[in-house]
Image (cartoon, rainbow, N blue to C red):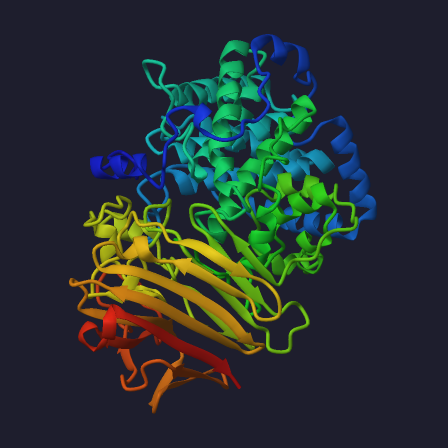
Length: 631
């Protein structure tokens, strides 16, 4: 039975606005990429020889040389070979696959699977000219190109499939049967590029959007356009021109300091396609048109590094999962290849035994190219204290690589209105000795399971369904809540003060978050010792204020004691001191099981609360001070 015969209208509508703050005009962004693309430029400057997507003659030669001499390139390639062999154990790509719990009502998993298969098979074929690989690539391409559509209603599916097909015919460089190449190029035009130009000539909603859809879809269209440039140069030129203009809207979201608004997991997704696009431009045209040097793009690698905590978890705000890949980060490696900074090059993880890598990234093939390009140079170390502004500002305090306490703190501002955003302004994660004491629930279950119930996961109005979920609303985050009400979804919390040094501080203005609930609210985080964190909430109430609830999410065991609580986990303990309001006993609310049937279960999850009734506050002002200190 075909999975995709019916698409719910509500789902199509919801994806139309998925995390997208649209720019109606490319001129609205502060910077633009270089964009000389025209039919004449394309004919004059596009490399005529294959391969020209990520690889070209010189890059290919460097890769093959490094496969003889460089242990990292050799080891990752062995992992790719193992993954390529695993493809032969699978049926040819098709639409008739079982509907799993995590699967969404689209073809994205299938497109991603195709991109994975081609990255593995085509890279091995490129290096070894193994006819088995070529035969399987041919079968995969024919099957995918004979799909009725690549599902343009959910254009991420088209973006990833287009990149896969373009790489397949580019990296085989004319070795596929002529009929297959013709089929592939026609499919790239009819099922890839043309659906990106809706009737009437308007742009697709993602073309100038600001989230990861822009990066993925424009990247796929660039690959497809380069692949078919000789057949239809006009279509190719206008599509690449749109992509370069449109990509600036997504790149502008890293401004001013490199914070990716959708969090670390989505940084890997969106940024991986932006760097792949930059690599394709460089191989095909000899320039990336300014992507690398777009303001704050390079700096985003620092944000990504700081998102990794000593525990192996990430600062998983927004819809991010909490665990990073156990393999080396290929996207970070691109930044390493461009800067020479070894901090971005996870050499030890890249040298993991190939048979322990498991299924590797679907972009591992293209990533092998820039792994081979890495040359270590003097590079800046990763800071231990860092602030990043933007639409979803964050701050980090760490102890550095040699810290015996393994101190890690990540806090944030922002609002629920950003792409993949939650009502988590003022929330924070905190670790000592590789134990995460204050957690962010993040996204720890599938979108598909929720969507198939008819639940509206993606709209973000104040009263929308999204905020019924514990990990989306403020009751599931280490922040404060007022009157047991939701945060103001449009109210953006900003970092208004930041001090580095031995005892760093950061102050977040939460006032817009509590519009109509408080007159003002300022949250200050202070690393007041090498193993403690002080949180100070300076609050001014209004007549409507009834109750202020200080919250901390944790999976530790909690013992209530005079003046606070003792948290225990993994053989360690943490003291929570209610410094300002010791007269109010700490409360513990069990959230295992969680309140809503659609909420994912998280073992031993609980919310620690300190409740401050408004009637106890003198002169309408109070400061809630809580100190977290380790052993």
